[in-house]
Amino acid sequence: MELAFESSTIALLIAGMALTGMIGGILAGLLGVGGGIVIVPVLFWVLKTFQISPDHASHLAVATSLATIIPTSISSMRAHAKRGTVDRDLLKLWGPAVFVGALIGGGLAKVVSGDALRTIFGVVGILVAVNMAIPKTLVISENLPSNGFVNRAIAAVIGVISSLMGIGGGTLSVPTLSAFSFPAHRAVGTAAALGFLIAVPGVAGFIYAGLGVKGLPPGSLGYVSLPAALIIAPVSYLCAPLGARLAHALDARNLKRAFAVFLAITAVRMLMS
Image (cartoon, rainbow, N blue to C red):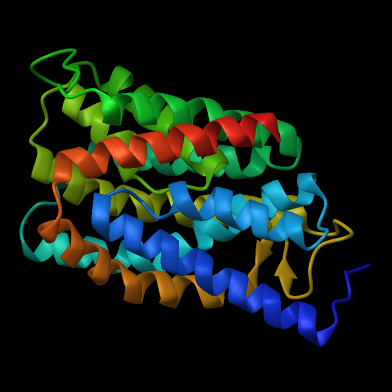
């Protein structure tokens, strides 16, 4: 049985979703990170505020974030492809493994608890925050592994974790590629395409996992909140250019440090919740 909301509560929910999209879009444009790393925790707290159980709120936040990534990743992928920054060879090597990993991650939503999702987000979020705060880029090797199996294993792990966190390709794949001395602009461009290959199977898995689950908000398709996705996606898309303009006016290093602190606090709060 779905939850019933009064009209005033629905209005507040709409406002909360719009605010989520605005924050996600601005920070995505400002810092070059995927909006999901912001959308998931903000949406989780918005849903919790309206008395949706933490277990359902975790799954809804992750699944809905993945749904919002689909249109933005297509737009970003096309823009990077026009500039020639999508590495097609890497996409052929990593793409299938990322897709399969994301599909596995989405399917795991049927057995993974809300506590586990928040733990994954919190732990990985802290690691990403530490990586952003370190002034020097971590370098493991001068080249990607020569072994195809190792490459596909790395890509599959990125797919699984990204799907379970509700994030696109950039948050994990860009620092991973940078650690193997992959050119930064090609890493970002290719990550946009990987984001699409994460979001589509991830959403499919979360829809399947949430079918028949009771206590979900009205308009939910499995664990995907369609009303939330339809509000967040366009608002985030429209606000991203504002963040990009701010990025040119502000110091990038200080911004990264500030976001690292924000992300660390957010991750810790997710772990505590």
